[in-house]
Every structure is written in C-alpha cells, then in structure tokens.
Image (tube, rainbow, N blue to C red):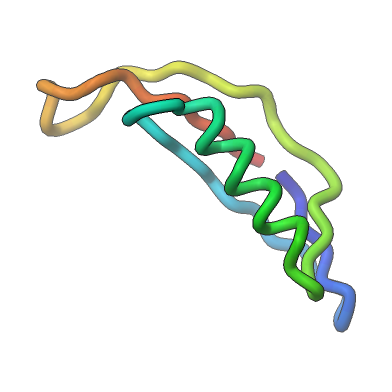
Length: 67
C-alpha cells in the first residue's frame, strides 16, 4: 500500500498481517482506520496473500498485504 501524507510530500509502505478471527475483516479495518486519519491517504494496496506461520508453527495461516 502507498500512503501519502497531506502535510508533506512523503510515502510510506506498510505491511499488514492477521491470523486470528476474521483475518480479511481485520485487514480491511486496518486500511479503513489508516484512511480515516486526517494526515493519511491510502492510495494503493497490494493483493492479499495467505502464508504459513514462521517460527511458532502451531498457529493458523496468515493473510498478509504488502506494498
């Protein structure tokens, strides 16, 4: 995802991931909350990818977004 700050000409790239409960809903809510912030505009998002956990393997798979 690309985020533009309304106060400066800058970009930030954020990785989001969730593996509990409504994983897709959690990602959507995170995007909505970022976009509702007065100084942030979400302008692009990556696709959502399902990935295996790393390290502690006894947990659900993740949904991840990157940009």
